[in-house]
Length: 196
Length: 184
Image (tube, rainbow over all chains, first blue to last red; front, side, top):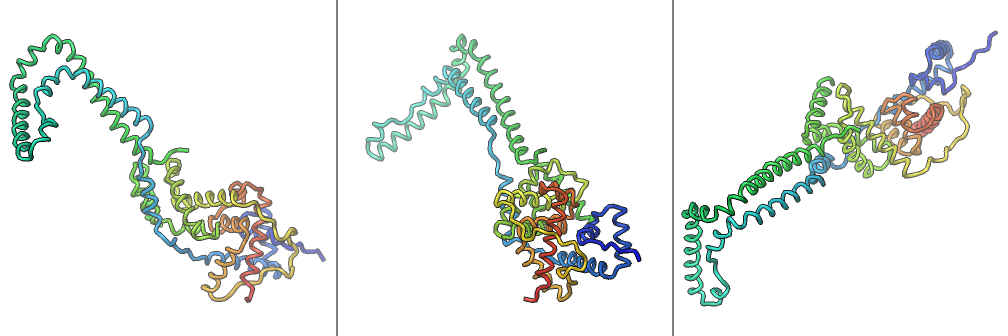
């Protein structure tokens, strides 16, 4: 009589896990078909596998969606963009300083209310303020009306400065805003998935 | 199912295009299954919720490398499983196993009896049994039975050899069988 080699528990599990090599799997199946004891052990394990499938999924106690979407929507300005914005602001200030001689007459012609005016009586102050505002409005409009004369009087200085100022302003405006728009797109990209 | 996969694919593509709300829909769809993975592995619902959220954020960052021709759900659950395994590895050292010797003798008295009975009761026993398992055993049960990983994939995910995977699986199942058939 030939002695039968039973299938081990590990082999049964490997068979059920589909992890037994072809020849070994065929051998094990053949043995299980012929051996009642091993077949019962295999059935018991198969029923455990089935029992594990009964795990019932339960949802989390809170909806995770809002928190995740909020975290993904939170955008931060990248360092490069912050620097670009600072440079643009600096250039804008420089241009304002260079352009000051051109606009200074307009501002100096405005007669704004003074502190002594505030020390007067309320009605008097009000009247003075109204008068001041009227004068200021007139003064603001007048230079515009006389702009041709103004520009012509300042022609030598204006002619030398204006091309650089206008070109600089255009450059800052176009480049700066392009950078800002690109930065906004980069900000959007920063919340997109990265390839790792 | 195929329709779900198609709409998942669409949501993935919209997310890649910068639509965060599309990803929100994917979260809505898969949060229960992802939470379940985390809960089974960690055994603590509050921690599982935190890790599930973290898993979605990690998946979002890795979405560019996701193959849209494959189903999103299994990939997402695998991301969650890997995250939880990393957490488990950092949290505690590997537990000392309860039994050192493997039982390979057919007809041993500790062989598993067939399981029968009410399905709801069985599900409850499975739940409590799984949560009682040591982390390393729960991990192999999760990867094999719920993530459908091969031994090789499990070995790679856990950083152990295939032989160790088989051993842990065997022991984990034996413990589960014992608890499931206990009459208490």
